[in-house]
Length: 175
Image 1 (cartoon, helix red, strand yellow):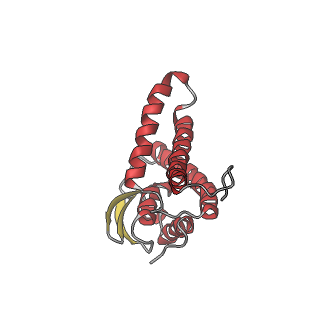
Image 2 (cartoon, rainbow, N blue to C red; image 1 turned 120 degrees about the horizontal axis):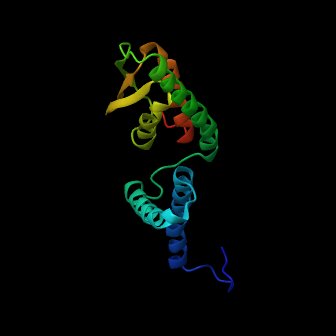
Image 3 (cartoon, rainbow, N blue to C red; image 1 turned 180 degrees about the vertical axis):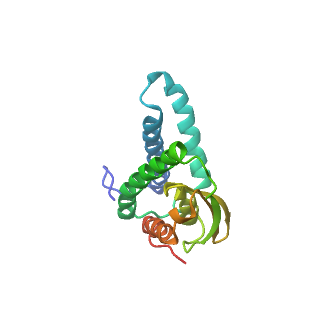
């Protein structure tokens, strides 16, 4: 890349751009998340600024730049899947709470994950709550213990479908 003076940018400028891009990207994403969750209330922006700056800092410390590769196309395909399953899961749990308060069909089951260790597996465990009546209870290596409100409502087929979607987001990282 050629600068305005006709010379290549100095390494320090390149490094600065390399550091600022992820900070700005994460900042924009966290601002958008804040707006979705809290709304555009100007009285909360002082709190929003503190929370967003802290969150960007913690995210950079816990998930360093370049440590996770996401596939944009996989992420775009995941968004409608996430929204549909979030709605289904919420409706199912509300229906159960109102019409079937008996939780005698609840059980724990173990699921063997094929996703690579690290962010793909952690992300999978976090989003299992999308499936109606499911919640991750414990993670031990490639085994995830899942609490289900109804064992028949969460077959392995549904869990594998979510696993494939997560693998698509992370570039097909299956073991």
